[in-house]
Image (tube, rainbow, N blue to C red):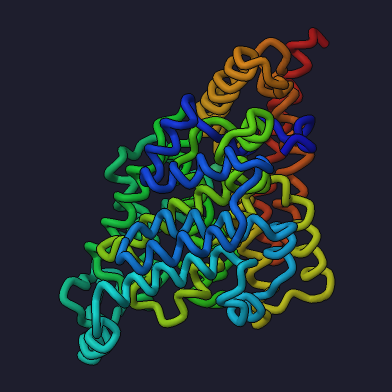
Length: 474
Ligand SMILES: [Zn+2]
């Protein structure tokens, strides 16, 4: 993050962490046990996290005692994983197959997490798989008003909902006005997206499960000026819009589309309004836990896993290859760390240069990473009336972090300091340095999509250039 301090400015979804009282934060987000383990890790002689053997023992004890504290298991496994030298490299370099074969490897926290969830589900519901299988045998068809025929894989609470044509048309547009939706409407609209992309049908998600999952995620988004549930909705809606404008729904598997939607929904969950840079400088327990690498992103994924570990919120419950899907969700959330920007861009660019292949899983994943990254910083693609409030909110959040950094005598991030930052200049730099290059690469897959994404960016750029000149009295 710090390497982008100059150019990564406003719209940048900088990750931040550790809320006001770190201890409070951890106790809020985790169990008391998790807190205890963190304390142990933070106070160990070496000042680093526990050894993997210690972690394993604790994990075994927890399991043996019948404890169902999955959140602790997840965090512990993540601590284990952090002992590997470079998690980022692991995820960048391993392809899906490799990850799947490394299910028990200590190098992949995601796989371990998934296994923990899976084992919990299995143990908590004996014979569940067979029962689900039996329940899926009877199929019916439902014809929607828009002519869409959906096979209703009968399950006790699977319901087909009608996605209103007008709403889906609006959601497909990058200029969708996110400000007109209230909190409950946002849940409804995300639910529509899951239905419209065929994810509900493919994953056999009971309606109550999807809504409980979305409500659970919404509850865990904090009320920050910027990193809040509405930002989550914006990113999800823009990801959906990109899928539509690039005509990806028939080229990318429904599992991949579902992973993208889910990653977008969870990508900033429990964001405390302070970024990774703050965590590193303040040497917070969360930074120690995650070994100073993609601190927030790993935390967001851990919180998502915690929510999914509740049976009534587990939208992957009926997915056959849920390990793979959940791993992809984790990879996509990690890709939103701007510290990984260069690697993600280079991989995708290389795939495009050598001939993008939709049948190649690693090619598709590189595309999904670019999509979630584009969606995450997409405010300036939207009309000025929609984008402007986000700029104000982002700098309000930055300002709060900056004040805290000063108060705690930590290094102050220049682009966050209200006394030093020039907002139009900052936005201009961000659009030029990050957004345009990324959207340019994205639109190489469908050049006609440039009208929807690149043209508005040039308009925004011109607007900020003019503002900047005015402020400088040119
Ligand atoms: Zn974000």
